[in-house]
Image (cartoon, rainbow, N blue to C red; front, side, top):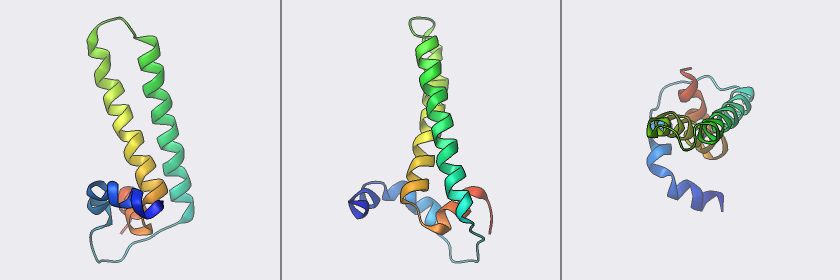
Length: 91
């Protein structure tokens, strides 16, 4: 199942898994990345719930927060150690 999901999300994963240099990876970085994904998804849901029926401009933060949470979940659950280190900016 994981390999199927990695194939589906390979365009996103390839961006973060590319490279051949050294990187610094800590297992806590993966957990923090998943936690950040949860926080951004909660913010997207909160904005969607609070601003519903108002100005359609509220879709912009929902879209941004939602995309950040999706990428965080993809890298956190499916990404390699290199992808997690690259999203943290540690090389």
